[in-house]
Length: 415
Ligand code: AMP
Ligand code: MG
Image: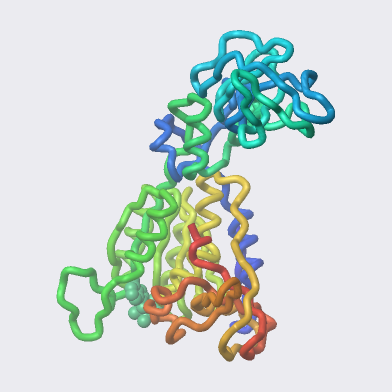
């Protein structure tokens, strides 16, 4: 578990990379698995290798519509005349043997008939009665798909730790497998803190704000395929908060809270958490999202995210998501999709912290560039909604001029 000195100098900020490393070093995959049907495996993580029970494809077959021939029959120069002795369809093989001087008409996917070893595409073949004329220049073994070429029988078709997307579902089905063993779902308990936070469905009293964090977190956690335990809004009251944390940590693998971790607010929470578990309060070199708590209460991992709605999403994507994937058993973790594009606009920035601005990618033909998406305040959720990427400005950056290359992280990469 991370250690931190609560009285640490406020200038003593923890870098994004160090925080990520501490978090990922201290969480490990949960135990427990279940057997599910192929379709129900979408988004789930394989708990076991999927071993191919058969070859895919099951037999040598044609990659093209054409003629199955014997390479040894073909002349080095000029046309070779062969007699057509039958047809092989996909799913309806030619049952005879292709003898010397013979050819079989063959469709894509049809098994290669015995005796034949090469496919000549139909476009280059001329017909002459019941004979065909094959031009010179064919290569022995061309246009074949070999048995086991995609997946060899007995080999690992998908490794444990793979997260099943559409391609994986198809791959499992291509092996004739109806059920797979997946990790059980990660249980995540979630609540918002703050005396001013109101739940939707009630009128707002003066000074109140509606709880949006539980909804952004609901979206992010649901997409990850977590089992979500929504515990509502918890007032800034030590006894209530302590109960909520205890219940959450008993019921879930992970507890995610928002709000109440900034300087001033954090003091009573810090004392309580110190009693209940082992939690570090970090000041991160990040904007938005400077305050964050991380640690453990009982067996549950705790993420105390900041309260500002944009900071919640930034810290979730930069620190929480990969930790959850790791606990879900995903291995290897997917690499963050980041690339450089020119900025259309000037951006002001102080050195010493990593800033996640909300950006919009612009496309002009093949050329991509990025601009800022609306007002960048850490409470302005609209900037997230209008954005399609983060513009990631590293600690040392002291500002951006139009045309400067900047790093972007598209939201489509954020699962
Ligand atoms: P805090 O981190 O508790 O100091 O909160 C920082 C800011 O975020 C304050 O303006 C809060 O009102 C706001 N905030 C905290 N939690 C939520 C929430 N669940 N939904 C919307 N805004 C919130
Ligand atoms: Mg608060």
